Amino acid sequence: MEYTSFSEQQVSTNDQGAVIREPSLESSPIGDAEIYIENRYPKEGFALNTACDILAIILEQRGRVLYHPDTGKEPITVSRGGKLYIPQGEAYAFEGPVKLEYVSFPPWTPDQAKHIQ
Image (cartoon, rainbow, N blue to C red):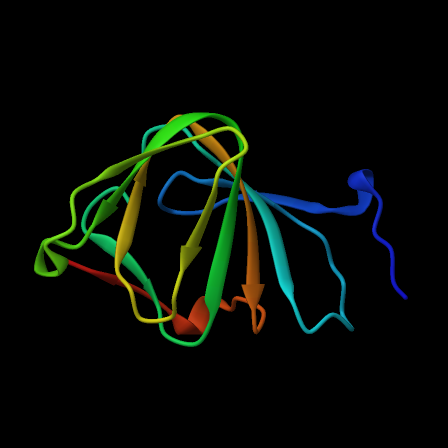
């Protein structure tokens, strides 16, 4: 068992403007981060994870999820208490403001994250 207190969690802002709070649970086979998106993530194009599936739990506010135009899917509105499954390889973007809990398996790593147009 491993525990990280709120004050021990690392907080950063990525180059796309998302504020990320991550615990440092070294032994966990599951990734976890709290993410706040003020405007749009990514700022342009779409995010795509090549190695992990994500369960996004909407913690606060409302936002929209945009799908890559190639999917033919319409944007959806997400709000507090909702859950969104993002499978590996599906391109997406968020419009905020929205606060999310990202749970990923296997743990998310920067080298597997891609931005596409």
